[in-house]
Image 1 (cartoon, rainbow, N blue to C red):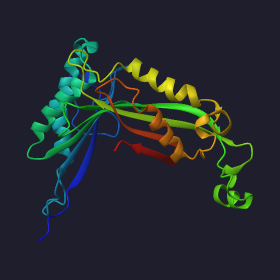
Image 2: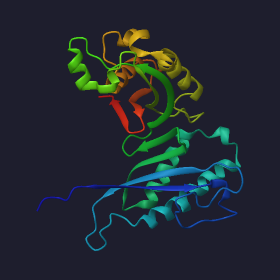
Image 3: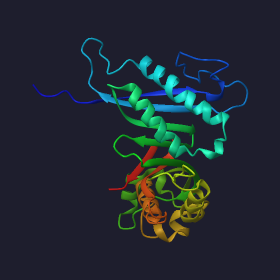
Image 4: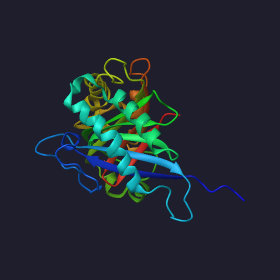
Length: 268
């Protein structure tokens, strides 16, 4: 009898760590629980567990069990961090510690990934088997115009392929860009690299180059290359390769052309 395929189950647990003592929460409401008591950080921990479906329950693991583990193990650790000097504990070291604690508490279930979402635009994640390496991602935005056109094709064929996107004067998008890197956190700062340096490199090599430009007319990268979202993502990946310091690796580039269309290029 063949082995059943592994199942990956991910559970988001949202909470305001500083509110744990004043308003302890058990249920995993869609919004944060415990909720923020005034203006305070709200974080999300996304726990991924691997295993097999149990025939008696139809589940891999009861999600209530995941909620209880995160609230008992991870949330108090984060609350302790907030009560201390938050600047002294970097997200990389914190995530590595949370991965070890939650992974041990979840046994015999196997936690394969833990993601710390600190905003809609930034997250950190740890994969089982890759520690002490940690991944960090941040989103950026740039506005640009482009025209989808292949000069080797007839006007009729271009119109058939690209429709309105073949408009002679082009059209614009507010592109969203996510840059995902990995590295071993510095033992003192807990960071893969200083965030300001990360942002500066992306701005210098991508945002300042493409923002408020007509990609076909203003950017040599697309003078002979059709600026589809696929080609834009590939060009950005190429431009960002090798710009980070030794020990920091570019993992993936994601480009959203619209909220419905995204292209991702990953390192081999």
